[in-house]
Amino acid sequence: MKPLGVADAGGGRSVGLTIADSRHHLHVIGATGSGKSTLMANMVLADIEAGRGAVVIDPKGDLVPDIIARLPERAIEPTILLDPAREDIRPALNVLAAKGEQQTQLVVDNLVGIFRKIYTAYWGPRTDDIMRSAALSLLRGRDVP
Image (spheres, rainbow, N blue to C red):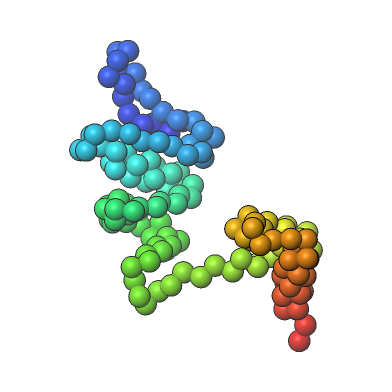
């Protein structure tokens, strides 16, 4: 159980989330200054202390610095910070990264599916075949010297 706090009603009983439930989206709602960022920071730090991974998306930019300042020493090395505002570091994502034939098929199916949804008005069976063949050629061609 991940503790979230103490309930105001019901005699001050503890409130928490199971680990399985905490792997899903969580909505935190409250007035300004009610402790939403503190709750989220404490939840992330509790996950890190327990050896679990965490992803924090911080559109305002005040939560991540607070978490980084409170990171345990052993968590600093494996922490990856993606900051789009930094010009010197750009995150890279290889959408065609795959290992093995089964994963290759899955990656290509997902990629073709994404393009199909984005370009629905212009997509047909021939476009589907061309995109699938091109992606498979790129993935299989990387092993050729």
